Image (cartoon, rainbow, N blue to C red; front, side, top):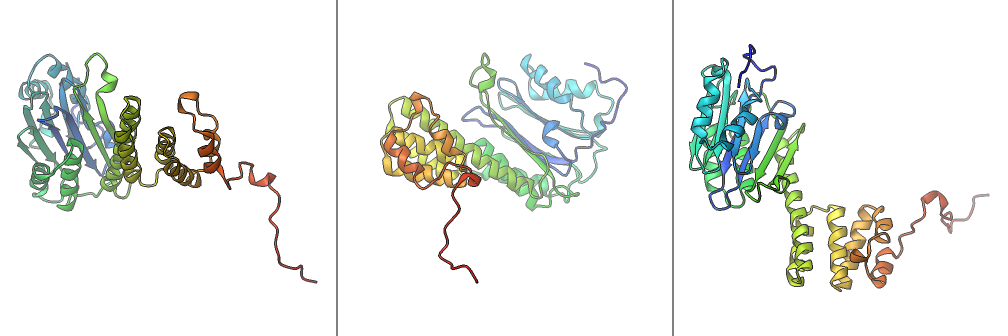
Length: 329
């Protein structure tokens, strides 16, 4: 593993981030916010069965895959970080944090990172930042993560929010990302990544990241509802579908599939109401209703009522509206 002659990465990733492991679920995650566009492409790295890494400041993106390779070999977070730094002539410019799949944590803030620069480590997590507005940002992140309830993704989002409230990046804000892996199966790695959200450019990236996380959770609930129905648990399916719609922030696709699910369970009134709201928000769902395969087909009674008063023809083909107004002579 050689770095070559390059010392400084061409992309300055002054930012704040958190790497963490959930002791109960064994999930691994990274969350980051930066004034730099597209920080989610280079700062966060994570893999089930290995660990999570944040590489920033005058960041070397190679720290991500190289650290994961070392962790997969069985090295702990501290050993992996020491190995990376030992080979890097630009280590005084780097800021790196690693958490391994056993909860071991290691962090490095190079002496030449732009102040305020800091990191704080705790049980199964590390928070870090450079070119920060103030010295209290890292402390605010750590405190928020430790006291926040909910999933690992929610707790890391709380840490980012606290950092922003404490001053955040001295340059302002632009991009954010959230990555979570769960130890489901090394043989099926596509099932391990449960959250992968990025905001490339936004006036309020952390707020937007929170909105995307709520949508992600809503779609996950909808998938759980469909699974519950397939397993013969209609009561759970109804509850999960309703919660998906509630969290879905008026998203028409969530409403459509929740309505279709209610139709399959025989909840005619709820199905019609939900489907009509989805169609009103996005009229293109009208054509999808009649294309569903047999295993997803909606009963005719629901179909007719859901489409009632929705003219499927393009507006140019419709008869002109009548008016009671007399022509002026």
